[in-house]
Length: 189
Image 1 (cartoon, helix red, strand yellow):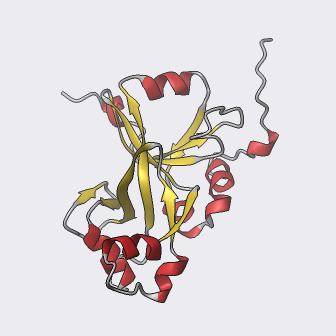
Image 2: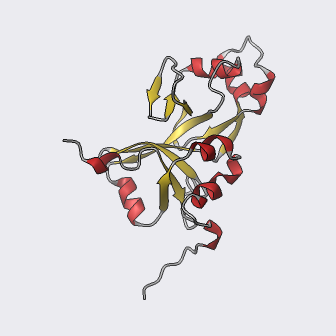
Image 3: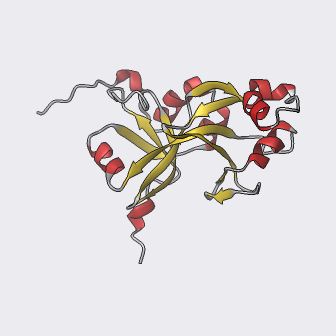
């Protein structure tokens, strides 16, 4: 029988606490794709890496001019692991050559989703990332016990509609928290 708590944080946001010292994760919101006793995987959703979909398509199809709309679609730094590998989060329903069903969302890793988005035939709501965040068995649980992260169920409005620079605050607001009012210091009564 599968332990009900083994995937409890799947489809949740991890919200970096203000005292997060790791430069890979300071001031980030991560969408958790998977969480089990074997580890966890997620994508940072609020840190663009400076590339656009046009830049990526120029590498994939050097003989074709990317559509103008691709120049305004940011690529996000999904995390420090496999930074050359692409991931596209989108609402469920759309199927591509490599799409993982996450429930309300899907995650596609094949190039056809990028071409579909560029041609206007792909999912209208999407987040494109290079790389991912990963944790080994028990590692995320240790970080949670050390108060490095807040967690809350993910919501598609924050993920797809909120401007990326507002996603950290918006995710914390889902918990009724203003991160600006938190301190990095702890004490005992």
